Image 1 (cartoon, rainbow, N blue to C red):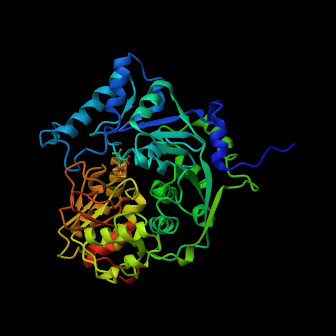
Image 2: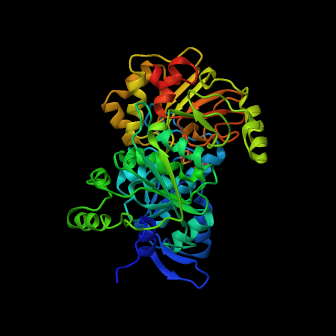
Image 3: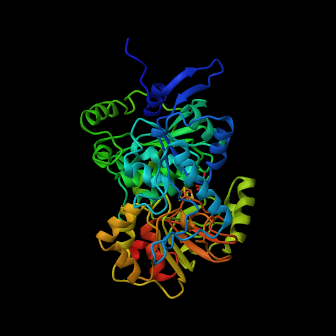
Length: 475
Ligand SMILES: CC(C)[C@H](C(=O)O)[C@@H](O)C(=O)O
Ligand code: SF4
């Protein structure tokens, strides 16, 4: 008898279940564990107190990213510069000590390979298709872009994975987001995922793993897929995933931590079996028409608060749901916006190109292409580009992108989470707006009182040039 058709998620899940409990929860094997400085100190401390070791240090990779300053990390004499904020310094120092103490792989803050964990994992070939990947970080969903089942975990789970290389989990429901047709010019993977979240809402994926399907994703680069999957969590999903294919294999081949030789061939043969079976069923399915999507920007304080750039700030009364009406009213007040205001009339004083959503080489190329030969508007006081990793930075410099950015009036920084969240010196001043390629526009996210507008790298570049939110297709 033929076996039951399964989805990509179900295949990966089944291949990793170590033990099924009577209540339905499963002990699941974890292939890769990424660790950063914010959510790991207590986990390591707990292991230390219990006298336990890390079960598989070779499957664990630690990188500092959230707290690192993005200005020079070494002084003129080559000595490492201290991190001023005491809490940040303590977290960074803890990781620096815990990694050698527990024998895990560590990329330190001044290494060429340092960067945001979610950029570093795929870039190093540490994150692989068909694997289970966890990190004490909600945007671990990004790694689904290479066909992994990847999700964020809490600090107590970090401890559990460090100690046992397993996790106790309940199976997720499956959801398909199918995108038909092709994206128009100037419409990027970021616009697509913002549009999808606007469509399904921040609770649309709750309890589900989303598989993104359709030609748009088949034709998309791995960088674009990472951007899309990254924001699955903003749609409430446990994870997002895209079937690994030739594009994925070409991206991973030869990466430092990827399998090589015969092992590579065996791995690819296995990865090819993972695609969702033709008759597999999803618990939930949403279809979106790609050609209807325009460059998309956020107006509120939730990632679902989006409109096409040609749109207007919505009237809170236009929402059917009472809670949503109230949230929209509060959002407009925080954001300092008027009902009916054209999105293209919103001035911005800050532009941030970076974060694990949009700091890979393609993102920087996309922004640089818009900025080439142009300069930021006078009203834009602060514009920074923060590459997702040292290797992205080096590649961009080899292509001369740093010159384009700096000639346009941008600062060219060292890799890290930076202004994506106010945990390091890069903050947006209170009451000011930021056109930001990051993934969250929550109240205070980029600093107390900061007003975030989420958009694509090309749209961030366009906003820098005109000093207001702008349709990149009009430049
Ligand atoms: C600090 C960290 C735990 C947090 C997360 O889990 O996502 C951060 O990366 C974020 O983007 O808000
Ligand atoms: S770049 Fe932003 S979203 Fe990504 S891990 Fe860092 S803080 Fe979180």
